[in-house]
Amino acid sequence: MNKWKGKSKGTILGYRIFVWCIRNIGIRSSYFVLYFVAAYYSFFEKKSNQYISYYFQKRLNYGYFNSKISIFKSYFTFGKILIDKTAISVGLRNRFTYEFDGVENLKNLLTEKKGGILISAHIGNFEIAEYFFADIDFDCQINLVTTDQEVTAIREYMDSIAVKKSSIKFIYVKDDMSHIFDINEALSKNELICFTGDRYFEGSKFLEAGLLGKSAKFPAGPFLIASRLSVPVVYVYVMKEKNLHYHLYARVAQEVKKRDAPGLLSSYTQNLESMVQKYPLQWFNYFDFWDDVE
Image (cartoon, rainbow, N blue to C red; front, side):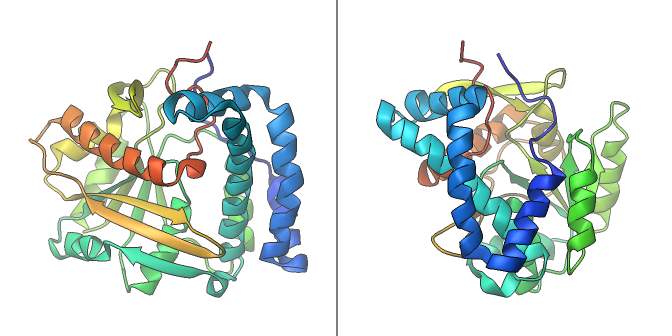
């Protein structure tokens, strides 16, 4: 069993290569390099391949050969999303096109002047959401709540090369629960709090719910907090389409009783499942998500 430990793969060298390729040969040409990278991962990342193969075969019911092809396509798509994110941060935002689906839900969220909760997932490219918000005059501070324990060297490198510094603030989950005060303070300023609701790390509290036909563990924090606060909750995803086009989805969470964290989680998993089925190659949880791989 291999559960997520709070750290994500990636090196500064990899990002430096992306930046060099983007600046010297262009975005689409950089995608060509990914054929070799994706092929390498498809052959040699045995653990990740085992888990993502389970996802395609057992949860999406793909055949053996379709699953093998999809593993390559998944790595290739993930690489393209990393290149896109890097390209946008170094000033090539105008090379991409953006489509808004449910933006009125985000605007309505702010008119209530209570702040709001956004819940996303490790699917698509949510990290470029702030560039969407700039297009719709969405002048609001976003606070990303994270349990990410990795060294911040990659983030610092990306900030150092960015043409425009990211406006997203980070609230780190702490054992003493002091992050709750940071969240409440942000909401009191009519700011947005964003969680990713699909990845917990061992030792943290969790809730269980079904996803793609099998029960899985989800971090309890986002759903406990969101269900206890009298603020709107919106599910937000930024998905890659063909070429250099992105599609932002914003859906209001179905109303659940206050303090009903399991009910909110159920609403979330139903919404997430519809996105996973629509964009199966953009599910980027390369570990034993369902705790079902021997």
